[in-house]
Length: 129
Length: 201
Picture 1: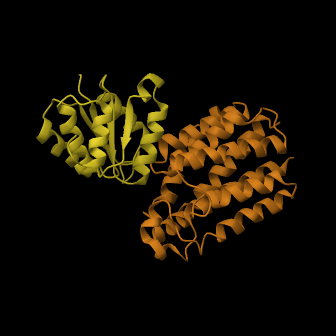
Picture 2 (picture 1 turned 90 degrees about the vertical axis):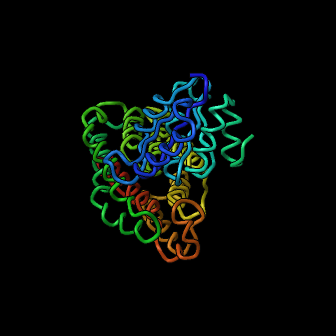
Picture 3 (picture 1 turned 45 degrees about the horizontal axis):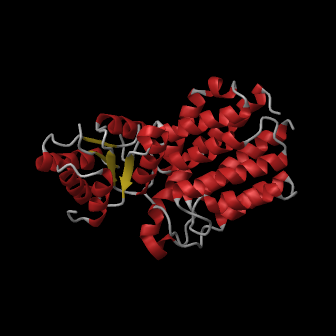
């Protein structure tokens, strides 16, 4: 896949899944999308292991943009990125954007073939590049 | 240098101290956060205990790295990467035969890594408000029992603080008047580690 992949990390499995649904409605399968939510026991929270799996599943040579909701999702995502092999780690970014709006706009931008930097910036500014 | 028996006691005592206080930590977190700190830390340290044979069989620096990795993978909240980073960096930095000065230096490096991971520093009502004064106490020559007392006083000192980092910061001034749960768990870990290291030293 040449388009940037999108990973959605929420504390809630339902929010993660619902956000991914909204993303797919916009971009279909033109963009690799993966999501995860919930702690290792399935309660509200996030899991580094699940985030690593989601990054793998949405992997693209163009890189992966991660959208997160609250603090722990961000911290766990940054931890997961650091645990990737370095040639992958430098092609994964955590976006500072609202999870739903950010994911939809990032994926829409990615579906047009935008670079990882542009996808991230667009999500963070919440307007098309 | 800790032999395997003492490493095992150290890891087990720290894990049990956290697990035994899970309800208290959750109650503190319910007051100013999302109420999962106790359950999360319990899950993480139970995973450490599940792996206790393998972890305590390693030299202390590697044991710390392995315990930290369990916390990263199992806690399920921000405290996983934060405590995981603390222990993993401590393991990476600690010489195998560390004296108190070498431990203080490694602990400082570990705290700096936690600051970077959490994009935080002292005064924001977090675990750092306990870890930093504890590190300073270890770097000085005060007695170990006084280090533990310093840890509890530092946790107590988070009560009047205004949270400016973490979920508690959403509450603004309503975060004042409650002890930070991360500060409390840090003090518990310091107390248990100091006791385990003192018993047979």
